Every structure is written in C-alpha cells, then in structure tokens.
Amino acid sequence: MPELPEVETIVRDLRPRAVGRTFTGFQALTAAPTPVRDMTPEQLDAALRGRRIESIERRGKYLLFALSGGLTLVAHLRMTGALLHRRPTDDADAYTRAVLSLDDDTELRFADLRRFGTLRLVEDATQALGRLGVEPLGPEFTAERLARLAGTRTSAPVKSFLMDQAVAAGMGNIYADEALFAARIDPRRAAASLKKAELKRLHGAIRAVLEQGVANRGVSFRNYRDVAGNSGSNQYFVAVFRRTGQPCDVCGMAIERVKLGGRSTHFCPRCQR
Ligand SMILES: [Zn+2]
Image (cartoon, rainbow, N blue to C red; front, side):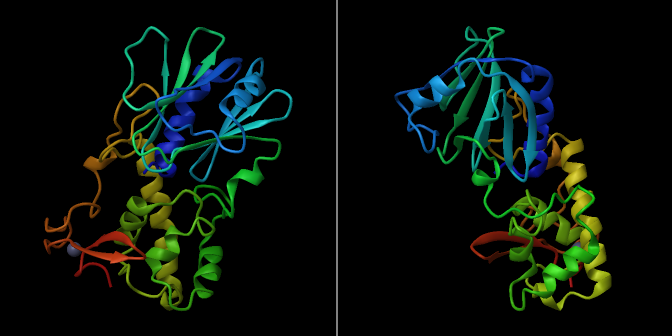
C-alpha cells in the first residue's frame, strides 16, 4: 500500500499541477463502487464545483486538498489507490472509479483495483484523519518521544508498535521492516524491551528509510504509481522486504519471514537481535 514516501511523492507532484486550479466537476463511474464517503457522488459534485485548490498537503498516508470556502477534500489511497493527472482525451486507466475535473482541461483520475480508497469532503480535516501521531520526518518526532511511547507497550512486538499510526504517522509494513533491519532490531521483540541506545538507532533508521523512499519516489512492488502513472524505484534498494530466502546484504544469512499482527514481517536472523 502507499505509505508515507509514496503519498509524499504524489503530493509533491500534484502541487505544481493542481494548486490554483478550480474543480469543475466530479463524476463517479457507475460500473464501480464509489470511493465517496458521507455524501452521494452527486452531492460531492455540487460541493466541489467552483472551488479552488488552495494547497495540497500530506498527513500520515492522507492527502489533504484545502479548498476555497474552508472545506478540505481528504483522500486515502488504502491498498491500491492512485491519483492520475490526465487529459480527458488520454487513454483510459484501468480501475478508474472516479474523475475530478479541473478548469485547465485536465482531470484527476482516482484508480483503485481493490476499491478500499476513500474521498471525503469535510469542514475540519481532523475529523477524517483518525488518531494520528506526529510526522516521523518532522521536528516533533524525537528519540525521546519514541522511547516514551515504546515504554507504554509492554508486550506488543516492536514491528506492530511501529505500524500504529499514533506512533509515527504514515509508517507501514515496508518501511517498518526496513527501519528495523537498519536499526539491527529483531521485529519480534517487545517494544518496551528496547534499550535507550536501540531506540536511538531505531529513530534514526525510521527517518533514513523514509527519506530514502522519498528520494527514490516510492516503492512499486505491485500497484503504486505516481500522478503520471510511473513506478517508483525504491524496490531496488530494500534490504529485507519481500526478500525471503535471499541472502542478507550484510552477513549473507537467508532473510526470514514471520507473521506479526497479521502482517508479513521480513528480517535477518543474524543481524537483527
Ligand atoms: Zn544479516
């Protein structure tokens, strides 16, 4: 699923293309279930028409379109969602569920194979965001904060702890596995068992793997695409994720996979303690 680096890539690409543009319509394609929440597609169409996009921001894995008149369009891509910036005359994109038209004769196509992605128009964006922690690439995310939160999770595996959006907003399965490898920490260990030096390493590793993900324009194992429909390249740089049975780059041991909290977790049994 798109995690922080993938959504950040989409937001950065969308800004020069869509900020300052005005929505001229919204259409949910009848063949597919609508991603619109809390209102009908017709209501969203009427509410969006004539509204200018003032800014586009990311919070966790959410995209926030701040609109004229004080409303915010909140998009979440979930498992397989994509926002593609196209002209109406461009070839159709597979799994397009909805189209947001802009006043420069372009459109944003919401394509989503698995259909879990959502669009929600709200007065107060925090209503739509759920319980989100601080941004892991922002100044509030410190090693001390991470240590404080870890100390409250007595038995939760550190992998599951990192997946909690209230700990580091935007972290997901891929970057949690990569951060734990970079910090040389066994993902099965209880979060509360981590020593101060380990938490410091983990804090630095979280930032490093997310920054690398952004620099490589995201990771494309299956469905992730940027606004132009192109893949990211971070899958060529991962150390453990989906490398089960392949040799660890550091020590040569075979990468192992276990299930933690229902999620596939990849790690090196020799490097990660
Ligand atoms: Zn290793």
